[in-house]
Image 1 (cartoon, one colour):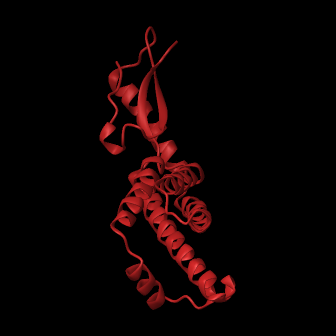
Image 2 (image 1 turned 90 degrees about the horizontal axis):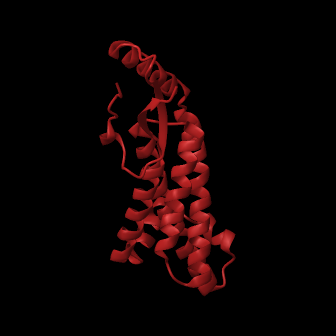
Image 3 (image 1 turned 180 degrees about the vertical axis):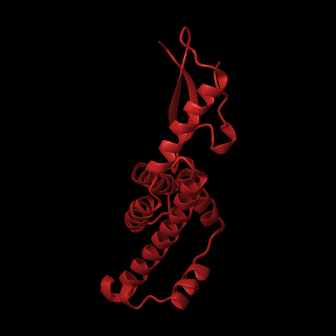
Length: 187
């Protein structure tokens, strides 16, 4: 008998972690199969590491911010493709490092991708201002604080920014954790 997976836990395109159960002719009872599957799932849960996911995701978000800023400065455009790349980078980093099978890993990836995207926007705006006034970029970045960041984000806001942030968040969530699929094992 094949166990039915809980597909409500993740989007259909999320990566899969397969938990195999024995198939005929040596099929244990339904209770034994369920117990075996539960043990395998518990083993996967014990292998998860939220700390590793946080570290790797933060590093990927910082790299994504640098990429976002660089692409925007070089092209003079904010590109939706950059949002996809940032989201996928962060999501994959969180999933690979954290080995997560729970939604909290997707949420972590989404939050970090949003932070990386906003930081990338701030980086590109600061570089543009520094170039306009002939200020060295490191000097311009050293003068950043929360109030100035909010002011710059407010002054440079465009409705398209929300779409780009949403794309990054969606991609990161989608790739941030693996969903479980229970399959019958061939004997």
